[in-house]
Length: 125
Image (cartoon, rainbow, N blue to C red; front, side, top):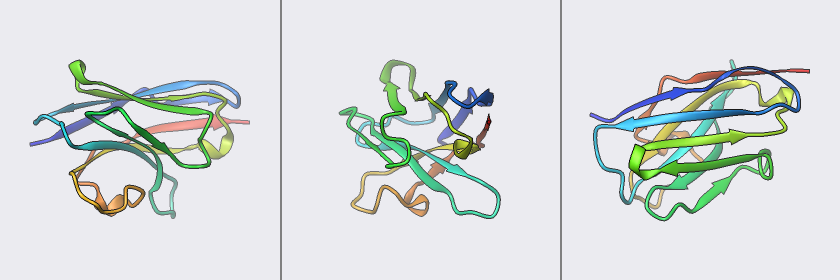
């Protein structure tokens, strides 16, 4: 059974930084990809970033390009999201997720197979 545990959320002022972590267990992830999504109440989960576990290649939403960096540590089975120059509009519940190898769109939450419980990020102005 795959388990994902996020950590690192918190309250930060605009312009500040946070690093989220997602510890994964339960299987090997070669060929899989992992992503970060975020959600605010009343809205759908929004794609933030994705990393392919084996290659390390990455994709970002336009809203976070140049500010956020996704990475993974294969030895620790952990994914990270370094968030710099945070803005109040980044405030959300952040989730990590695992996507099985397929051609389904990476930016759609429904195509991810496993989810963590979420970690809250709040950016004050």
